[in-house]
Length: 533
Image (cartoon, rainbow, N blue to C red; front, side, top):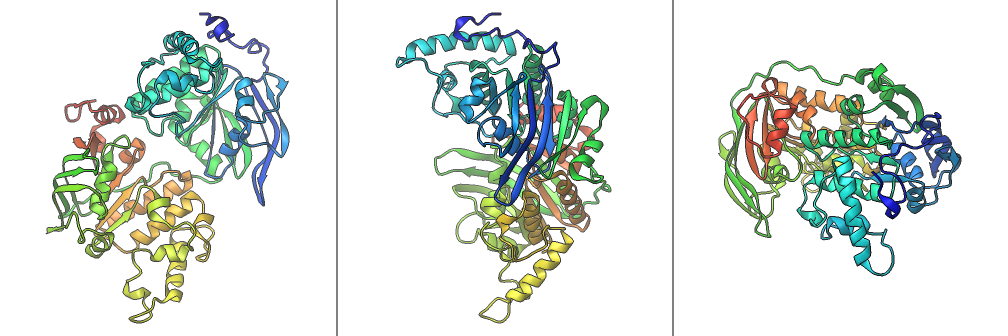
């Protein structure tokens, strides 16, 4: 299919150098430092045309810096970039687009109150009059949508589209700008399993048409499923590039971390006790009058983990806020902890009263709700528990030395690196920041632990550690409410699974009697019979 002079190239034509063995992208000796931090160290990589090439590594491994150099956000301190065998200088994102590179970011760059068509042509208008540009773009989009299974209504307003359809718009934007090389950064982080499967079909279609795709993801299952080759980065260096069919998730994890990693923490069968948390017909209406929770009911017993699965934005955050004691808006229903009703709104509903009742909370957003990044680690450890007897010097003053000693112990037990209580929280990696929050909450031996997105943005080695500590707390008799968008995490950790969609519980399943497909249907609002495959 020819898109004509409007786009200037054949949409289905593979790059002419594919048969010649010339890489679509070659980076040679790329180095980049930010002050004393060496983010990239002499990195070389070859990505062949018409392939899907994965790049994986722990937080801080240098993946994002490398891709930012390729897309023109940063300039390398040293090294060369070759596109289709030609040395190429990429000074900014416009230069990258001219070189045929498009990037789909984890957090979409779309104007929410613009239409699909307006977003696609934004920055690529031709002339002062928009009508000719819109007419041409509408025709081109129709061709692209048919060619690559990227169907989306060009007149739809972005904010009215699902996350999966918004992602299609981002891909269409890149293709409209004639990209032959696509970089996708954590593309499935906010998708249901069905949406992720559709994305993979799109990527395979793009590959079949000769497009080159770089996939940045922390999900090893996706690497194994969709990529042809995978490069592993560790501490700013490229440590290996392997053919995907000749490796395994375990081998890739070991390359990433530098040691063997348990991808699934073993756990014994739960031995549930008495009901700890009882939620009945919980309803939340926000300040704008929008219903966020619509009659949620659930129970959690001592010694079990109830996992809440769902795409972000379907009421999970509001559920945690109500239980944690800081939900805004109108709240109705009943919540009891070990038989005692909790105050759901007003002065009696605070984090302090929740902690006094035995509820600990690891929030979904550690930066905004779990830590004060400019404060020292020992100060963050004390937050919420500053009135604890072991932290008091006397009736008037806290015992800072006691808090620092306690922090040292928690850092040792939770393997926080570096183990320095005086460092500000912002000096730690994401995984170590999460360990600080977990240490603060878990070591108070709560009756109920609320934990939201426990491993979001966390290194694979830290994921193993965090999962183990959650299971240990369950085995010690705590009730745990786990909210995660990662289905693998939900299936691995949960003793029971409830799925939320549009502020409601769509169904409850046992992990060994369900699968990702069924959970994905429930996450999309499609009711299924219990235990259906």
